[in-house]
Image (cartoon, rainbow, N blue to C red; front, side, top):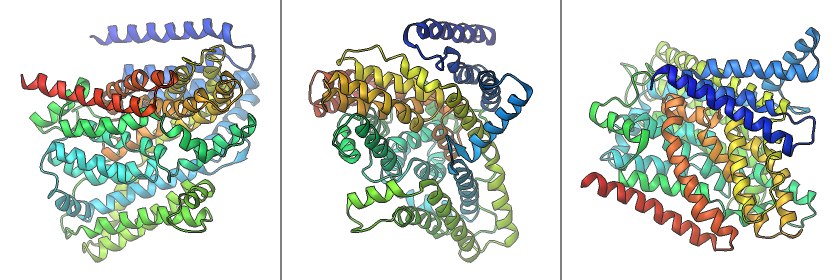
Length: 555
């Protein structure tokens, strides 16, 4: 397909979708604040990213358009534009909603520190030492992928920490065994948010049960958020089947679609990344310094410090009391902890330990350590630029009420059978368009759950419980498919993979799992068929899929 043909198709699809939104908006929205063009900035960002493969340019144009559209809705004057710019800058940095919030600032600090730490750990030879130890167990591409997936599952505390610990640690080993960067990014991304979203104890659980508590209060339901989380756990079909899919895929050693092309390229040529890949970090800082002593503890101690302080920080900052083995105690601590601040503090501690280990264990000179730190800081500039633009697009979507508009498109759907599926679809679209799973949850849980509750006859019934799981899973599915998502970007950073290549290869797998979740999970569950049967059936289909691929390739 030529560039011209690709551009024409993209333009046709863009305007076609806009027309559908214009038509649908007149049917489902009576609120003057909900306008069809609220979807244009994210839709334009995705379209341009696909057509140009330039993510920063695409996001920049979309953010600029969002800023102008927000200005036209507020105050169409030069002073109004200046006020909009000031509001926008504050929203992206220190303010979310009506209160000061340093979430984004702490994330920026975390990325700076974690990139510097990774650079020092690599330069000190620590990662090389860990890879040498892990190579005893990783005998080939399949076992390497299995180990990577298991690490992703074990490090369940949070999606950010998961990605930034697993990706850099396993990347040298996957490169050695000729596993493509696209496959590494897929495993990292698919064992981060799904695991953190399912874990009884994670940085996600406090946020999820907080939303559940709020909606329970709004509909007069006498049930706490943690109990609602456990009620919905059996209906988290996408997350559960995604983890199963990753494990079966790794064990089988088979792939399809763009991922197969990437894996074939890596195996046959040794090129773990596409020649035109645009990395988000400095690829020159991937080898130890010439005079560094290869010492695995130079990596183990900083990473162990980071992970230990994450757990300890969540407990202390959240005011944890009682037994450390109590899920209730951890739930309360994680609900109260300032999670991103703990991430930043833990990263700072890990960075300090990395410096000490580099000097003391790996015998690096001060000059070499300084070079490694600066290399890590420089490598964070591009990903942070993309993160800031992604946050800017989210701010524009909030200003234009994009999520509320998308949610309103389902408000006249009343079938209890199809409603959970449509909630999943709406959450997917909203998360894909805005690039935020948490934001999608915040929009749809207060809007969709009361509708489900009403469809159940104002009782806490099956439709309500399935919809709880459908919102959470749909938000993660859309996040997986979106090039605008911060977790997509961080997974790409951690795996040193071009973001658009990651999205392109992950998309068919995510769509496959979502389709299986639909056929074997949400539809049968709405018919009152046990969710365990649905998960078992979905697992069987996944196994048969890769078994069939194995038979097909061997024949």
